[in-house]
Amino acid sequence: MAMALSYLRLHPPLFPLPSSSLSSSENPTLLRPLSRDCSFPSSTSNPISPHTTLNGFASASPEKWRAKVSFFPAFLKKGKDAQALKEELLDAIAPLDRGAEASPEDRERVDEIARKLEAASRTKAPLKSPFLNGKWELIYTTSESILQTKRPKFLRSRTNFQGINVDTLRAQNMESWPFFNQVTADLTPLNSRKVAVKFDFFKIGGLIPIKAPDSARGELEITYLDDELRLSRGDKGNLFILKMVDPSYRVPVAKEQAA
Image 1 (spheres, one colour):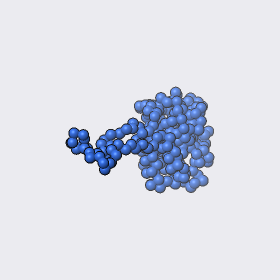
Image 2 (image 1 turned 90 degrees about the vertical axis):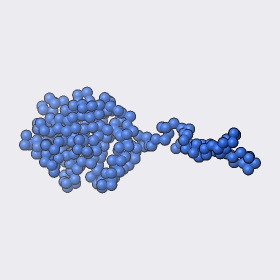
Image 3 (image 1 turned 120 degrees about the vertical axis):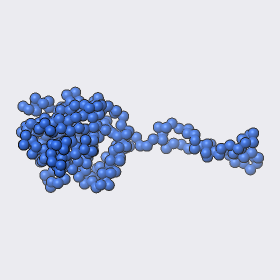
């Protein structure tokens, strides 16, 4: 148990954990309409005003009338579509070193774009979608624990991956060099887009298994999903943006992990 807690402090998993798992200072906080002129042509030879009906009564001005009538479907007036928002989001996070170099203004801008993309998501039940299965690479997060910003750069994980398999309700977080640590977890659906996470085994260097303490739990909500990009938010409010790298990846089941 002590080894597992020590590991959690040094290598927080990509999923969020509750405050009871770690100390408060170390707890990781781990989707142009065309115009049409409807005015009457003016003519000096026409004795009838364009604002007057044929029976002599004044009518509303064409400008007011046009303001109340739309010739085009509502969908033409909506904002950017999901593809445009994805491109804008990827452009925004590209220079931020997965979030480690993000200023408060950068984080605010990324969050604003992310929320627009989440609202445009067509995958309303991510846990039932085949898009969720596979291995994802973390490309941006607001979690300082995951980014390991308090460590020297040469001791920070270069890349973080997360594997998810819906059919087995299993998940796995993996670090790259220099530590290659891993953690696996069981998932329990809370609704069609949110899961409770119960970690079972940590692997130091990807080799030495350590049973996770019972307090190693969290929640994760999938707020945007397609076949290329996933946005998730943890129960501590952190944002995670991941890209798909291997849709065929399988997460080890618990008995394989313990072996």
